[in-house]
Length: 157
Image 1 (cartoon, rainbow, N blue to C red):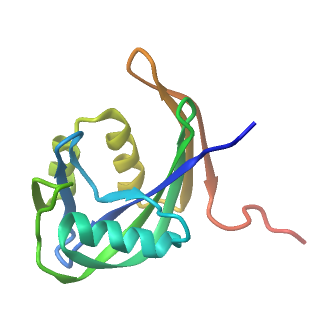
Image 2 (tube, rainbow, N blue to C red; image 1 turned 90 degrees about the vertical axis):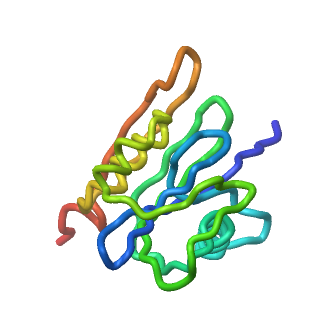
Image 3 (cartoon, rainbow, N blue to C red; image 1 turned 180 degrees about the vertical axis):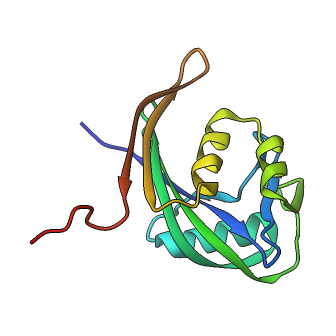
């Protein structure tokens, strides 16, 4: 059997005011920037490229949030946090609008269920890695959800 997983990366990008970067996708509405990793590309390079392509800004990765998987389509999404370092907001074929928004406003603007769930995890600010599996059959459904502390957990003597 041939395995054909696709892997994507996304980031909660914040600026010096604590605002969240959102892009308005023609397909899913408002969301945080991200996309598929190209063959031979690293996680970091892919994330920086996707953010730049969709929004026009440069970032520095500041943290890891978690992983989720579409169990029906074998797509793995890896989520990070990042901070804005430079650049001017710019739209693209993948973003009809781009802007900085207060975190509470961002939660209101995002309506796609998967994107909202991932944003809640990104905004949590806890020291927990969030892992979940999901599918779309009769709407969005979480099929497995796990959380682990960052690091090795219990001390090993």
